[in-house]
Image (tube, rainbow, N blue to C red; front, side):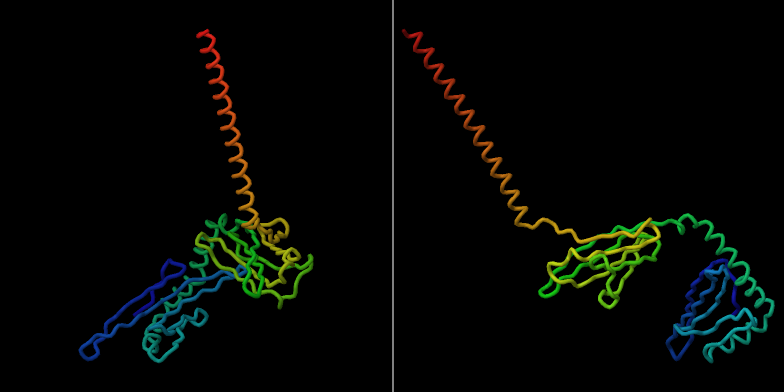
Length: 260
């Protein structure tokens, strides 16, 4: 078995082999992952590792051009591969030269997507249980992932221990969502403000909970409108009946005049 340098930045291969054991074959899984990563200082680091049956097996060391065996079963393959120094130098060239060049090309192609900044949509909701009133601040559909969310009381930041930890999760479209929650005394919800900072925002965004109309008030408005409509219909019907009665009276007087 000999390693093959491939053009992929990240390659995962599953290989099943059947080894006779008694009457039934036994399946094994070989996994390989190779590629490189670019750090914040623009330096790169390559990796080339093998796994066997879910356990670490072999790892290539580009500095020494040898393979590090993670278990006894890897030693025969390690000795075989280290005998091919030319192949080892080719592996190092791929990790230190070819792979970073391919990674840089992909970064340039995706620069517009990676540099875009999508500001969050922020909303504060109100939740009441039997004994606890909770305000939950949600930031939706933002990019990139880094975001700062905190609660203010009377415009002053709260202590970290008073607030539930921030939770940020990915969306299916590449954006993110995050939320923080805070237990507050009932009736004091308006004293608390959620402050959100994100690269897509020109300045920190402040959001408070805005109470919605209660069901009783809405039903009252609907009932009032219904009563007005009924009164209007009754008035229209009354006018129509009066006009009909007036028309009949005029007709009766006309007939009486002809008889005379």
